[in-house]
Image (cartoon, rainbow, N blue to C red; front, side, top):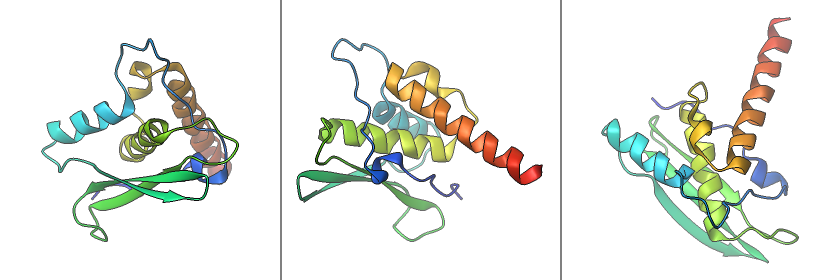
Length: 134
């Protein structure tokens, strides 16, 4: 089964990263689709719901909702942020990739803001593990 998803910083009102206009490299959304395809897993399913001053993007990875091989990750746009639907899709995809494979150094291929977010999540996870062991 897929590992459980990590909490999404987007849900706590922090700003979502965005991809620079001139970015020519890989994106979290594209890479999530490729990663799943290579493992013969179902494509990620994205859905959007409007709400208030923004929207919520949910990506479902794996089998039917509620199955042990499936989970959903959400990212929000909203008041006080410049995030758009594309940013929310990318963030949801990054969160799903991190949940699936946090030890892989996938962050190296992403835009700078997404690399930084992955490295921050990994650092927080390592600190938590050390605190629990210590």
